[in-house]
Length: 445
Image (cartoon, rainbow, N blue to C red):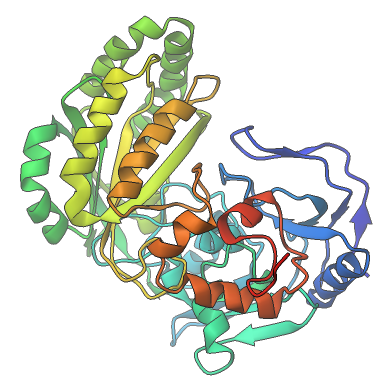
C-alpha cells in the first residue's frame, strides 16, 4: 500500500502564488505503490496529482484531491557508461542527477539556469536551456516508465509504446505518473562562460552570428534602458580558468541575490525608482570570463522570488516581439523590476513541446513578488499569440484548449492518447481542464 500521511501544511509552489489543501498526501516508495495509489483514487472518485519541487508558476501541479510526492520512490539507478544512458527515479532532482552523472564522467548536453526541479517536473513542462543546436531537456529522454490512469505500468521506448514516448516526454502530468526516466547523456565537459554588458541594438544586429558561432547564447534586457547583459557558453578542453571563489560569491550570491533582492524591495516600496534601479543594475554588471564543469556554469542560485511568463516564438519574430514588449513596459501604470530573458532552442518532434517543428526564441518576462503583473503579462501574451507563440507550460499564461490547439499540430493526437491512458481524468486539475479540456475528447459532457 502507498504510504499515507495527513497533510500538516497546505501545499504551495516556490513562488507562493499557487496553493492547495490536499485531501491526503501519499509518499509511495515503490512503483506498485504508485499504481495502487492511482487505482485507489480512481475507485474513490478522487483526483490525484504528482507534485515535484514546486517550480512551476502555473497551477499545473496543484492537487485537487490527493497529493502524490515521489521523493521517497526508489527505483534502480542504472548507469550504462559505454552507451551513455542513465536510468533514474523520476522524482530525483536535477541537482542530484548532475552530481550522479559527474561521478560517472557524464553530463546532460544542456541545462536551464536552475537545478531544483525534479526530473519528472522538468521534462513534463518542457524545461529548456539555451543553445541553437539543442532542444528542451525532454529531447534527452530515451525511455520512460509511467503509471496510467487505470493503474497500468507502461515502459515506453522507441519500440514499445512509441506514441506514448512521443507524447509523455512533455506530458503535463496528464498521461500518467512518471516513475522512471532513461536519459541519453554525453561525456562530461567543461564550459567557458563569457558575460558582458552591451547596447541592445548592437546585440540584435550581431545576433545571427552570435547564435551561430556559440554553443549557448542568451541575453537579458533591462527595462527602461537600451542595455543588455550577454552570456555565451562554449565547450573547451580544459577547466583552466576557474572562477575565484570570492568572485563567484560576489557576483552570483551577493550581487545577484542579496543586493538584487534589496533593490527589488526598494522598487516595490518606491516604484518611481524602478527605472533608475534598472539602469544602475545594467551598468553595475561587468564583463567576466571563466571555465567550470558544465552544470556548475549552466545553473546558478535563484533566491529572489518572482512570478514569470515565457513564450516560445519563431526566431524571426524576435525583433517585432521585443519592440512590442518595450512599448508595453513603457506604457504600464506600474513599474517592472526584473530584466527580460531571451534564449534560443532547436526544433524537436515532441507533440506538446514549445519547440515542436521549429527553431525557437524564448522571451521570459518576470515580476518581483508582491508587484502587479497580470496586465503586463496579458499584454505581452496578446503580442506573442499573434506571432505564433506557444506558452511555457510551467509559467503563467491564460491560453485555453481552443486557443492552443491550432498552435500544436499534434494536439488532437495528444488528446486522443489522454482519452486512452486516463479516461476518467484521475490526473486532472483545473489547469489541465483549461489547457486540454476536461471531458474525454469524444464526450458530449
